[in-house]
Image 1 (tube, rainbow, N blue to C red):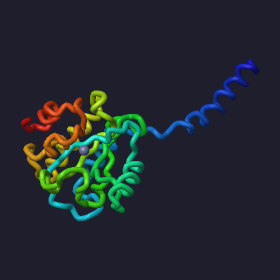
Image 2: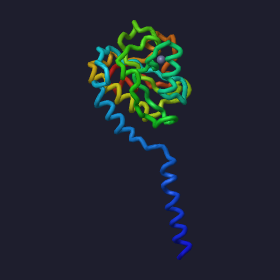
Image 3: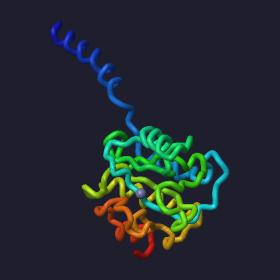
Image 4: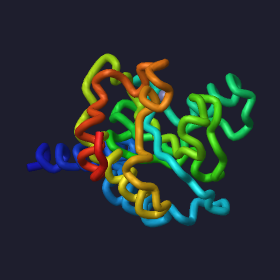
Length: 192
Ligand SMILES: [Zn+2]
């Protein structure tokens, strides 16, 4: 009896420490829904966006903070990331979680590709290397939902949704040969 209650006390004492050690759970669907609901209130006057272009980082362990630092140094841009949104892959943050990046400033991103091929484009970046592996379903689902929300909120037709490789006329592999372009365009209701 005494041993059992001591054991129970020990287990109870362990519980808060274990709970505390875990990173906070993120409800990806709720977080994304909240972000999509306030797309038109990004914190700066909304720009007249014309295109949506999909990229990847080609790096599996990227974070928005790391991309910010890298682009700030590489392009000399104090705003950091040249991507308006990033979609996480489950390595550093949950798979399918969408994070607003340059969108918060409503500034153009002009360093990543020829801007004349897709002027005023919203850059969505998938974290990961999809030249090397398939795109996980939760990431594609989040990309489809984000694209559909942006098309609706910014009145962008399906013909102006594309990928970096196509708008730059095959000068890059981005967002990778495994990116399911046809399925993506079909799911957002656009042609190939
Ligand atoms: Zn790209």
